Length: 90
Image (cartoon, rainbow, N blue to C red; front, top):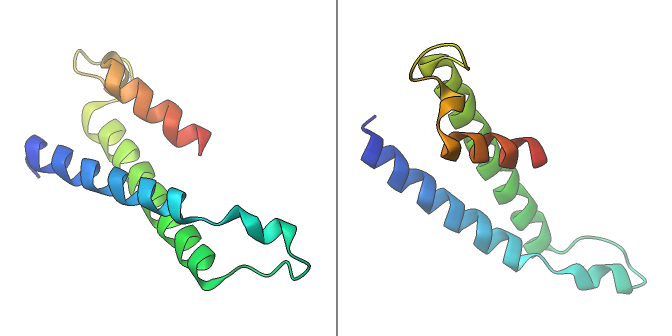
């Protein structure tokens, strides 16, 4: 996949993930009935899907470019380091 296309796709997925995070309703903790609503279930599934895609992107980048030792290694680019930290944090 071309780099520009991949970057646009990752941006779209990041926006979708952000919308899913914003859609989650934390008020369910205050209710006596602690069941998740349909919106929360969908939000969690979308977040899981987006995080899985981000993780696959990081792993493929490491496999294609190498991890550290090569001149174009994955961790020699600061944006890739940030992506790795974000994936590990989630």
